[in-house]
Length: 254
Ligand code: PGA
Image 1 (spheres, rainbow, N blue to C red):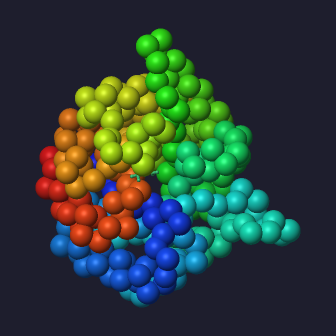
Image 2: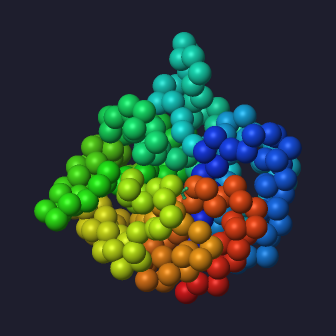
């Protein structure tokens, strides 16, 4: 990763209307236009994809999807394929978000989706994170296993195109993010596991994001002390004022 930061806004099932989606996207496009050290990815619900996509290329502004099917085409009701997303101008795809895992998505399915995204020429943002923590440190094992299983199909030639988003489930949708010092420790651990799987050179270059209750007030410390390459933001990414403030903060953080 270069010293550029990546901020991914996961809109989840928001906002309620297309008009509001357009308004948010317009605000964020304007805000990122003046930034040089931050790339922003907006991940709207599928139905708003074309309203949120700019007519012309906007520097540092990208479109992402919140999920994808691992199937190529055919009888899969309700699903959207990787090639459809690519055709719609999507560059990044979130896979394995904890809310989808909680609804039954397995590591095996996450692995197939990750590969489908790579094969279609997009970048997967692979979410990993422990459900809870105890004194025995069992979260290290669960992260390691989750990474191994979710990355099992990835050929060595594509392993440096994967972005890892570390999102401890207990820190999502709450009032406080994880402590930046602990984020730092986990980002080192994730790179170590990546090195064991694909080698040190690749691990040194991969992008690691943190997600879980990030806002404009804690973003700078998470970047600076947590030493991550960027952020995956939920609630604050549909708050026009808060997200613009967050982007500015990240752009200025060293
Ligand atoms: P949050 O969500 O920022 O609202 O905690 C993060 C996420 O689920 O990706």
